[in-house]
Length: 217
Ligand code: 13P
Image 1 (spheres, rainbow, N blue to C red):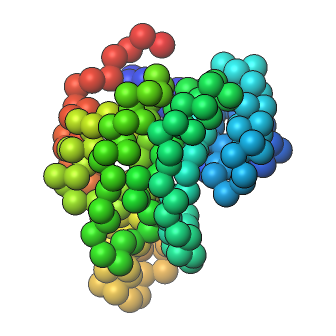
Image 2: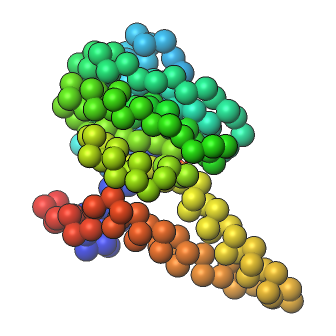
């Protein structure tokens, strides 16, 4: 990131403990997320506020989460979606001072079993109340028109993970199958970075982010 000509945020996603998040900040992450969405509201707000103040000591941003995004980061669990209440989201923002807020509007991590039905009404109401950027987790499998509508309704940051991991591993798998006698692991992953890059380029275009970075750091 330091060598890149463009401004780059290095974000520590889904931090669960103060210890890990502090370690990430010490390593130079410019943004951290504390995911206390599984906790009762008061505890989530108190712990997020504490992480936010730690992040500020490092001049870093802090993202919190309110409501419960379904699925799980590694795809092993099927946590039920619990949509964000717009009024609670505002209360949470006021209690924590976070720089960005992840919301649950029917989205889930991992592959969707069926296309999600995003609650654009909840998103719009939340965006009208909360003055900081809103974050959509679980970007993999959301239909393209829904991304566009979500952005129009006030979504500011979109996380896509599984789609990239899938492209990366499938490219490596195909390469391994094509080179059964190769023993150098570096030559067995194939063009997996290129596969990821193509997806990211497309998402940057789709999300209307192309050409928007500006160097003021
Ligand atoms: P997906 O893996 O479902 O795209 O979600 C990624 C994510 O939200 C990371 O925080």
